[in-house]
Length: 327
Image (cartoon, rainbow, N blue to C red; front, side, top):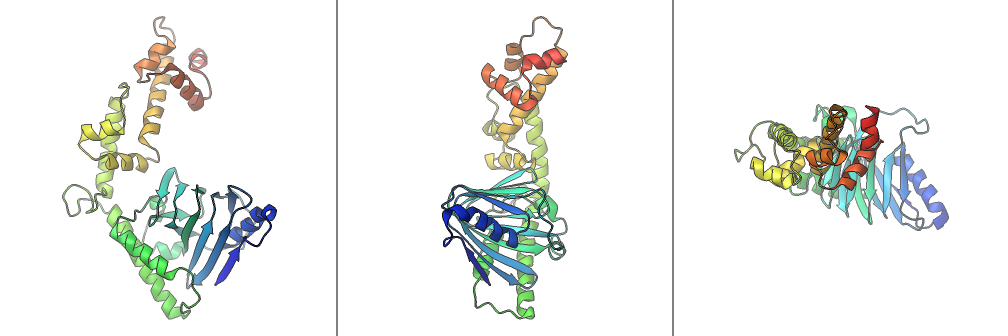
């Protein structure tokens, strides 16, 4: 077991020292602390083919570097990021997972990701070799960045096990013991994902798991329904996730999860679709004398011309008037 801390290091050197520690445990990862005078600890312990780490840190942003210094070749691996205390925002593959105490998510070490801690944070991290994980979870890439909530029994089982295995000096080191523990952990992990991704209805006949989480088949269905409703009602200025949920007869949580499966949110998706519709209209009406910029903005669902202009420029890099002129 290895223990590291920056508390005995001068504040001016802590940032550099902490990055050296983190890069040894997690290659090609950089940390940007919120302030120089921060506190951070890392305890690391191998457990057979798995690698456990407990990380305690002040406010910071962690990100995987696109390119790092050459490292000794190692097998690709995934990581479980389990929230022990505090909260974090995890981004990868177009998804955002906000983790509270007891939540967890899967991270692919090969792809860019970021984790943001707004406050003091404690996280349990488990490195899983890709070959070991894919024996239980055949296609882990499609699960990366999904929040697995503490309200689910499988998640509670996993977190209870991780907390009991958090690095400590008296864990047996025999290969038979560590191998058995790894098998149990991977079985629980596979069970958690199986309950979230198995198609069809489960238990309550609604296309949802017993905790109200839509199954994979149900989520795909409702995602199509949600997108269809939004696209058909874009011109309604009052369109929002609550309206979508009420119109389709599903819960607001279903709507949130449908957009999360697309790597976005209801607000961001509606805004992007309105801007695309506005751009199409600007091109098609470029010779129509009666179609002003404001007419088009209001027609596609905006009720604030300034907001439309700012959003259009941010999305397309050019003002609506210049966009029309260039087309």
